[in-house]
Image (cartoon, rainbow, N blue to C red):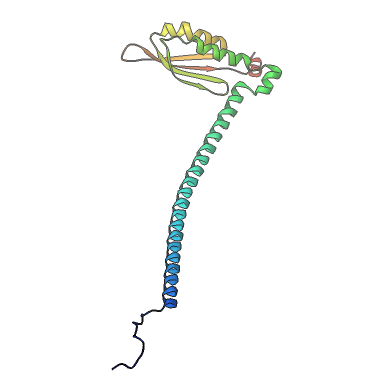
Length: 184
C-alpha cells in the first residue's frame, strides 16, 4: 500500500546552504593558517637577520676601536716625528730641520748591501742604529764617517758574532746649538 503520491527522495545530510557555509569556512581557516605560517617564518627570518646585524655591529665597533687605537698611535708617532723633524709649517718658514731630514735620507742611501740594519730608532735629538756588519772598518768608513758629520756625538759598540761578523750599536746625538754655545 502506498500512502503518498510522490516517490520519496533521499534527503541529504547537509543541504546546499550548509555545504557552502562549510566550504567557505574551511577555505577561511586554511587561509588564516597559511598567513600564520608566513608570519611565523617572516618573524623567524627577521630575528636571524637581527642577530646577524648585531654580530656585524659588534665587529664594526671592534674595528672602530682598533682603528681609534691605530689613529692614536699614528698621532703619537706624528707628534714624535714633528719633535724630531720639526713642524712642516715651521720648516717652510725657517728650514730648521730640513738639513737633518735630508741627511737621514742620504744616510739610508749610503747603507751598503753588506751592512744590514736591524733597528733604526730616531728620537728627539738622537739616532740609534743596530745591525750587522762584516768588518768594523767597513762600518767606520761607510756609515760612521757620515754619521759623525751629521751628529754632534757619535759612538759605536761592536760585538763579534760566531760567524766572524760584528753586531753593532751606534748611538748618535745632536746637541742643540744653544747648549753647544754655552759649553764654549
